[in-house]
Image (cartoon, rainbow, N blue to C red; front, side, top):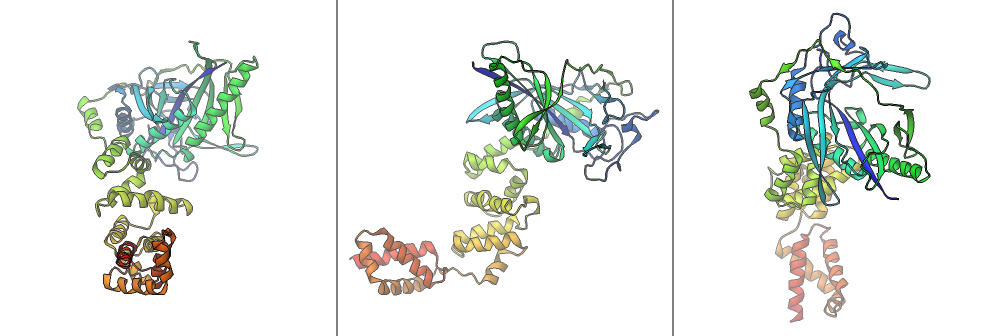
Length: 477
C-alpha cells in the first residue's frame, strides 16, 4: 500500500528586541540564570503588562516578508495551562485574531518550486527554560516573557526534504530582516513538526504525531523520515498509529515517546483583560513594512544579473548572511567577481570549516582578498603563490603587500628573463624536444616543471606556457 505524508510545522521564533514582550526586563539568553526576571513576567498581583512596540514592528515585518495579510488591530488572549515553566498559569498570546494570516514561503526542492502555505503568525510571550539534571529539574526565568512569534503552516508539506527546505528558507529570510538571530542550537528558533500518513486517495487525515523541539535543520528531515517509516510499519502490520508527542534522539536517529495524548488539549482561551485591543495606525504600519531590506531570493537574482554569477554560486552566497555581507564589501574593491566568489566559496569556507571559525571572527579583510585576486590577474603573483598569501591572511592581520614582502614572493613575468631560462632548459633536455614533436604530451609538462624549478616557482605560469610554445615552434621550423 502506498501512503501520502502530511506534515505541518510550528515554529516559535524569539524576536530581537532589547526588552521582553510585556515588561522592561532585558531580553538576553547569555546572562546567569534568573538575573533578568520581572514581576510582570511572573504574574505578581497588581502588575500590568505593557506591549513592546519593537516586538510588534518585528512581527509586522515578518508578516510582510512571508506574504501574510495583516490584522491592523492587536488582540491578545490568555492561554490557560498549568506547567512548571509557566509562572502565571497562563500565557499571553493571540488566539482568534493573529497578527498575520494566509501567507507562504517559496522553496525549491529537486529543481522544482513550491509554495508552503502559512496559516497564521501570532505574537506571544515565551515560557521559562527547563534545565534537566539526572534526578531534578531547575528553571531559568530569564527566558520567561521574551517576545515570540509562532509561525504555523498549513498541512501541505509532503516530505522531510520539503520540511527542511522550508525551515532553512524561513530562517534565512528572518535572519536577513534582523527579526531574530534564529539560532536553533540556542533555542531562539524552535521547531515542532506534526506528521501523519494516509493511503493515497483518502480524504481524511491520519492520526497526527507531534515531534517536539527539533534543534537543527538536518534533524528536521531525519526525524520526519524516521517517523514516516515508523507509522507505515505500524499500519502495514494492522496496528493503529496513536496520538503522541515524541522527540528525536540524535544518537539512535529515531523518534522516542515523550507522552501519549488521549485528546486535544483545551486551553480555555479567553480575552486578556489587562490589554485592551490596540488599533494600529495604518500610516505607521505602512512605514514599518514599506522599506524591507533585499531578501535572499532577490539578492540571488541580482547577483546573477549584476555580477554574472551562476545560480549555484549566488545561492551559496545568499545562504549565509555573514558571507553575503562579506561579499558585498568585497565587490566594492575589485571587479573579477567570479574568481573572488570562487575564493570565498572554496578556499575561505573550507578554511573556516576546517578551523572551526566563522565570517564574523575572520581576520582577512575583504579589501585584502580583492587585492590578492587583482595581483593574480596582473601577474604579480601566481595562483600557487596566492595560496601561501591566503594562509597568512587568514591567520594574521597583515596586508597582502606585507606578506608578499615578508615571504619574498616575486613573480617573474619579464620576457627576456624567462626566455633565457627557457632556452637553458631546452638545451639541457633536448631529448624532451624530440618527445614533444613525437606527440608525447607529458614532455611539455616536464619542460614547464624544469622551468618552474629553476625559477623556484616564481615564473609567471601563463607567460612560461606561451613563451615555451613560441620557442618550440621556432625549433620545428
